[in-house]
Image (tube, rainbow, N blue to C red; front, side, top):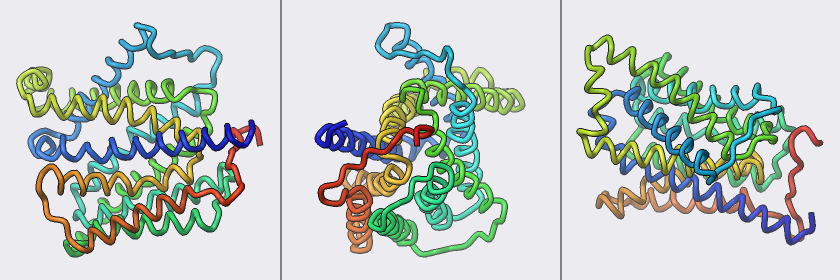
Length: 315
């Protein structure tokens, strides 16, 4: 691969990861009201079922290609277990048991754990400016998480669940990188299938116990706000964003892709300010600069260098 081709591929990888982070960030607008009215299992179930149905239709129409024959499924199945299953269980329970400042601060350390995991399992050693960039982004996210003051729940179970989510998200980046024989479409399809199976089973048990199975089934057809949230989460996040994110990880690696995590938080804040008319403080402005500078610094290539990372397993 020549230098120009390598630079173009790296740029596409960064743009894909950036776009995915922005799409994840906008989910706040669509779920802010919904999460207070329905259970996490209900929303997750419909999110993944809808994503699976849409991707299956695209596959049947020949728009996307899926081929699992002869491929080793162990790594990609492990990836689908940690993200979305372990991640969303840990995040959902952890956020309920802890304060917003605690959960925001703990989730912010995902890039650090990803950096550690990639150094150990992928032998991807970060450059100094990448570490500095990730540190700046994390500082920005923590500023946003703590701007309303820090309050402590001292809930050990909540902390454990949040750290489980952090570990799962970092492990997902490593496993996605290792599953190099699968396309980003194939990885995302398996993730949707795993999420649909696990969370729908959980939702059916939950609603069966409450005697609300019919309400659960009819919900997207009777509640327009819920349907809107499901469609965005299924199409914008679970389908498009994860296809882009899986592609980005395969091109720029786990370390650099994790540096865009702060863009998701930043998008949530700015969308609230611009669309919902929420206030924007000086501290948020400083946090915005830290996140943007950090993301740039973590993905900046030294002059004359082309970061063409070898495929895992071909080192």
